[in-house]
Length: 451
Image (cartoon, rainbow, N blue to C red; front, side, top):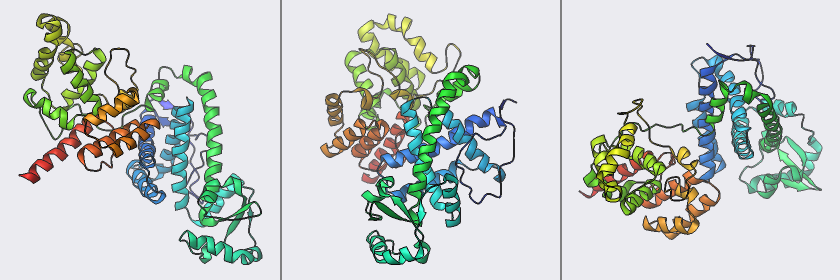
């Protein structure tokens, strides 16, 4: 069994806090399969938090979301290994996300958001211990100083709906520029250049320090990765590390789910009602031009396979279109093989799976190509026109365009789904076949309710 090179040592079980600060890589043996699986579990947590933040969830909603995500994904059959899994998964993802500025920025934001949630769960004693770990140079307010400012501090507390309690009488004086979010939210009393931060708000101070330490660590990790690790591990860890940041974490839709089969007879109607924009665009271009380049054939063909188009129907569907442009004989000679190949009937007999949103977004269509993600690859004018054809109302279009400008392409697709179907999609859209499946549920429920 292959081991990722650390010698195992027991972690301190008598620590006052269960929240690691990830100061140094753990001296642990890690099986190669755990190396990847632990990272994927943590990635589910971080991506879930990212989706929640992108959807504008409030801090308390993010806390509840983080709690559910952590409970669902970061468990371990052996209770004693939970902390190890936490630490290992963080350091694996640190390796994955150190490699570019955009990756570092995303990882930094999500890990800091997760740290904030977990810090707030700690007892006051554990929080003070964590502050001591960071060696924060902030001065605790004396009892006499607290009494002299008690009215002002109480007024601020009441204004944010948190009246002072005996547990909140511990305050720290901090240069106001170090807690801009608290100052901006008028959640602290500011006097002579200092903000008076209550114990229940010190998470802002500690999170800032955590983010700073992690930011520096990511730069150092990147240097080690590029200078030695990538080459040394090119046959073992490097492929895993380079694939993890674009991993799709949901079902692969290799087999149709609730809606087991679609027929050629109904495909136009279903395309209008339940295809996501990327597939609808390819479908319309195929009907219009009677041809698609390889990238488009793969993206649409595997999607149709995943929604239940059988091989014989797929051959008939593609032949009916392509023969109008290239003739039936050329279709049989040049194109039919690849369709059978996608269904695992030729070559290595691999049963290929439909493309995820992540894979589609990361593709690079060239001139004359129609595959890829419209939210990323369309011009603003073309995207607005396409959304208009889907009958997305003008207000929703502006919301979608706002997400596109911030490069939240899957969230833009989620908002489109919600506007088209008149219902929320809290899970978010992560796969075109998921869009189809969720759409069919809505369409069928509406048809049953009108019967």
